[in-house]
Image 1 (cartoon, helix red, strand yellow):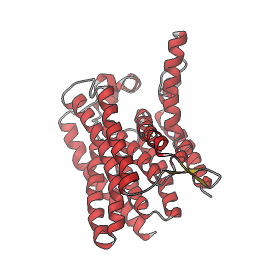
Image 2 (image 1 turned 90 degrees about the vertical axis):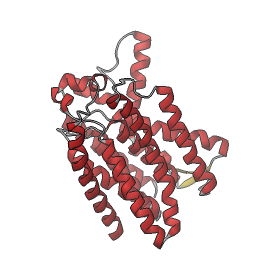
Image 3 (image 1 turned 90 degrees about the horizontal axis):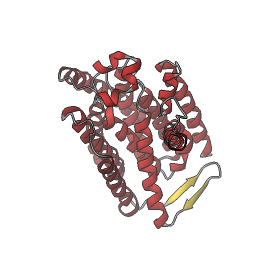
Image 4 (image 1 turned 135 degrees about the vertical axis):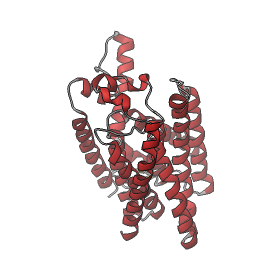
Length: 328
C-alpha cells in the first residue's frame, strides 16, 4: 500500500504544478472553446465563454512525465513490470494525441470542425488495433475475458476477440467524450472508475496496472482542483479521449472489459441517450430528451451542475462497488 500512496501523491503534486503553469498560459493566449462547443453551456451560464480549454494538456503532460519517470525507475528494479507498463502508456497517450490534434485544429487554427469524424475514428481504430496486437502477440495476454459474478474466463476465438476489443476501446473512449460537458463531471466519473479498476488490480495482484492506475488517478485529482464547479479549465478532447483510452486499455489488459457495464454506467447512459435521441427524432421529428447527452437534459430541467455531478458520481460509485463484488 505504501508504493501506491507514493505514486498517487507524486502524480497529484506533478499534475497540480503543471496546471498552475499551463492554465495562465492558456488564459493569456485566449485559448477558449468555440461557439459550437459551448452550446447549452453558454446559454445557461455566460461565464463559460471566458474559461480556457485544452486543459487536457495538463493531463497528457503529467501522464507522460510520470510514466517516463516510473518506467525508468522500475526498469532498474523490475524490468518486466516496466515493460508491461508500455502498452497502457501507449494507448493512453495515443488517444490523448488524437484529441490534442482535434483541439489544436478547433481552438488554435479556429477550424470549428476540427478533425473530421472519419479521420478521428480512423486514428482511434489504428491506435486501438496496435494496442490489441501488442497485448496478443508481444505480451501474450491471450483472449480470455472474465465473466462477472460466475468467476469464469471465456477464451474467445481471436477472430471474435479483435473486433470485440476494438469496440470496447473505441466505444468507451467516445462514451467518456460524451460525458464531458458539465464542470467536473467527466473528471470525477473517470476518477471513480479508475479507482475501481486500481482496487481490482490490487486484489488480483497486477502490479503494473496498480502503478498506472495510481498515475492516472493522481493526475486527475490534481486537475480536478481547477475543473470542479466553477471550472477554471476545460479538458477538451485531449483529456476525454485520453481518459477513455486509459479506462478501456486497463480493463482489456486485466481481461475484465465486461465490468465496464457496471462501473461505466454513466458514460454508457450518456451514449445511449444520444442514440435514442437521434432515432426518436428521425422517426417522430420530436425530441425524446430536452437535449442529449442526458446531462444537458437535466440542466434544462433545472438541475444545478453540482447536483448532476453528485448524482452521477453516486451512481458510478454504486456501479463500481458492484464491479468489485463481481470478481468474488
